Image 1 (cartoon, rainbow, N blue to C red):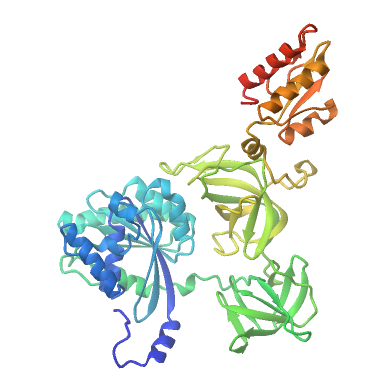
Image 2 (cartoon, helix red, strand yellow; image 1 turned 60 degrees about the vertical axis):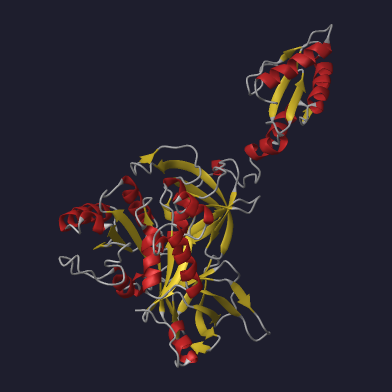
Length: 545
């Protein structure tokens, strides 16, 4: 079923035919040793998607291991993977048939690599879940089905693998099929197909198997080649995020971008967000000329009949079908970074072509990946899936992720390091409206970041007694010599200094500081000893190191 170029074929015709093929992206997941990489390798090998030098290298490596050919080596691209016997990253591979082009994402099976699966599955049309026929549906199998449903993958293919090790028993397959389809239906997955396979032997992967006469369905490749994925696109809601404004000369102004969803036609009346100005589509331009209409996911340049102010990050939509325009939304985050969520800082959010600053206003829960239950939580760490309330400083033009996988998705970026820290999926608007108590913009530097940079946390330290001012200045010197940013400040400036990470010494103040360090009762006879005692108390309480 491969579509390789044969001797004597017209190269230009072959390239044109290849360019016009539909692309299907799919992700392969499963527990460790369920055979994901072997299945992918078998697909590549049997469809002619492996180069001769790759095939020779794999044969050589396989013979060293005592086998003729180890199909898993076609996708396990990292040396560390082979040494540990597990896949630890997302491996992308490509092959083609006469009908379609395929992009494979082979993702890790361990729970600690949830972020990798989310990355590989974020653009997938199909998820293939491998289940070991000997072990049945495991917690990890349910977890992968849950994440596939969470990411809105419309088609789920369940490969019940290693059927050769259970004697190709139909009862075993039917039991697993009933259990996983029942679970997937509760998750809202509309299309679930189960196939009995042996990736190692090649049964029902590319070619049908004589060992399963009781199975009359398609092979894995036949199913991937015929699944109707065009209908999965959202062609009802026009969403055109503007990527750039094109002005080659004074008589031309075009707005270029990729249609996130919907269909646009010449003459359509559209609304520009956020300005809400209206106009009509004057022309739809492409490199090859003008079009009468365009649909997602085409990249085009739109021209309007009226002089309307449109910039990068704006969105063109039909006036009868506006997206949700909101600054406060409920969202699901998959946390991708080793550094956990810092609630005290603001982040950047990239949504379609729009960048906005945003705060994680509340963490409502995280998902227990063993039980799939929501658990109340305060923080979010690496590989966590969390329900949060997101507040943006400028409104988003958003749809619920379940309705639109493009305008319902976003990424969260650390505004200081520029690292992508989370991927998000939008739900509905949060119930509570913003009030004056919510305040305005937030500091871009959190207290935790200041503590890491300075080596200590900011604090207000009262110094009392007859020699309070002298003790405060001696303590300031002692703290400075220890590398601490400390200063003697008036009482009115103390809180602001503490928020900036300074150990603020307030001479003549009363009571205890915010960290529970008792104020210094300065001895008149020995202010140096009183200052030293104060610094020691601060160190014991953890204010300074």
